[in-house]
Image 1 (cartoon, rainbow, N blue to C red):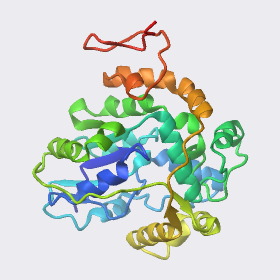
Image 2: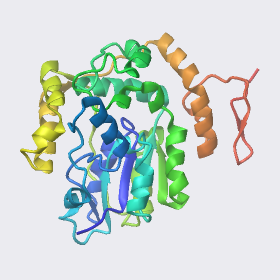
Image 3: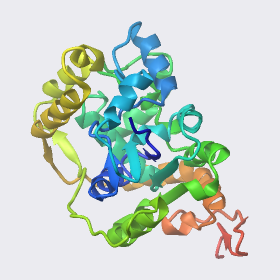
Length: 325
């Protein structure tokens, strides 16, 4: 049985669905048919079990069950899976490293404010968030840390700690602490949107497979809203263990995704309130500065953050965050 050697670890809502679709088309790549097995984020397993006082989420918990996801891989050079929340997990990087030290890691990040707005909308439409107002969902985080105002269909408690989810620099460092830089490829969502095929070719080079292959492309993971919110809430509240005990993982996964798709429709996301955007960008600016240093790229300018008078020097001698006046 093949052991996976490639992981797409996130971040969610940052092009990962398109990346999975493009990469799994390559004849030298085998990707798990079960999307997001969540095997290596054992901290989320424990968090969920403690909150519900029983196992309700994350049915794939043993190595035997996990490796079974790759039993159909035969001759492919690259065998992998994608769980975007591995980036947020505090333990996934270490667990993946202990499982396969030679693994290649791919991740994608985007402007933290856009990420949060998109993530909230996605969780809401999936029945994993019960506060429709984005600002209120952000504001009630202190109460949620005390276990209050949590949806019954909760995935795991810290999935709704929005302030922690944008700490991309800290999350990326966890992978760089374990894996050599040559085994980690970090994408900026803006670059991917601007040139999807160009970025795809660079990923194929990173994986060491034939870069001449051209995938079928289409729009993926557009913003969706529920047709009947009750349906998604019921699916979420059932949990994964109960359904998983009846159906094999692949079938359970396929049916759940199909049901959510049928019970939703694509709708353009309403623009974020300018005042709230400005406030959130001010709050996220230190994180973007830290990311700029870590990745040696001026993300403050790319994502149109206000200059604060703080000078951050990149390794190539350029400076960012300097007030032009």
